[in-house]
Image 1 (cartoon, rainbow, N blue to C red):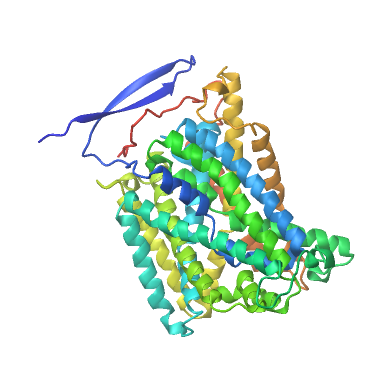
Image 2 (cartoon, one colour; image 1 turned 30 degrees about the vertical axis):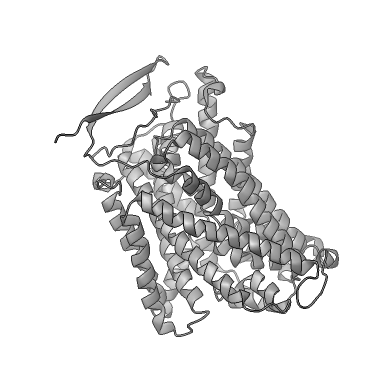
Length: 531
């Protein structure tokens, strides 16, 4: 029986400002993205997508660097900045959920060269992050199994797991991430309640801490033994900003699921709002109570940060549990950290395959990567990204291979901030384009009260934070050249990608008057592969 054709209608702005409608007939059997992600799945992924090792393990380092008040301020400030960025991205995503996320927005509103640079930089960031998270999960298992010879087995099992989940299609991916996200959210809420009980003296040690550590030393007065203390306090707080940015990294990945969201204008609007309030609330509440329950000078905390085991023994929550005399919970936390790392690896593999698909759709990657199977999976994009995930086996090699893997992991830390900066620039240009073309913002399905000032604040703030990202490499007795390169290499990479494309393709910055500010989305439509 023959299939009836579907119409994929795209609206394109003409030079005169009028909207022309172009109809393209597609057969239902052609490969296309499936809008199978439900509202509950997207909301839960949005809430828990960034909850992982950055919170469960990295928050202890933030406390040691900035003190209880410095850590809280750092996470609060970066959380607000990321929330403003998500509102900027949310306005564009909800207006045109048929577009290829910030990759296409950068090309359409700024310059095709910027879309090329942002897209490949983001792909590199997430394709390397997938094996990093898998290796992190294998290290977490060493909390129970200390035999390093077993690491390759665990990496293999988890790699096969995330590949199979992604091969199954977005419907099953959504259910898988929903379950693991639910576990993470419940765990964070439980840990916040636990910390509150410990702080109020309800633990077995019956020590009512209150704001004791806030009064003793709210900031870090001895960061890198710098004098005077005022300078030490400021630099300790500044170090928290980059640590918090790493913890919040991944929020921008919400744009990758836009093409596969059911009723995207409703679900994406709800997800963006959920991120700003609930994620920041969870992170800030957790960091606040960690600083109330444990001293920044706690020997176990300092030792954990020095050893950097990557297991639950490094978690400030576990240190709080052990110092308060609570038993068993440390194993539960380690299990949750394990599921978080595995879930993050799964999400990064998904995001990397979709970003490569979007680049191919834009004609900025080989067209074979836009090939989509009947279940909506971009098969060749997934295959290439899965091959890159095998870089995780470097962590099982000799010292040189392990160092190479750690170096690859470190150069991804700046990637999220570059993407956030690019989102802000794209929104500023889009906002100005609408003004020049006389388009009212009242037509937007989602309009944030933070704009246009929010996008400007994000662009300026992350420009400053990125510039001083590697300041700690100058504070030691000798200049840390390797760390300096890993802290900044993303910036010249983006510059090379931008100007390389610009000189090769002769692209120009998009004129505000001719910018395509219209939406290409038609209700209930799906995105077909162009090739």
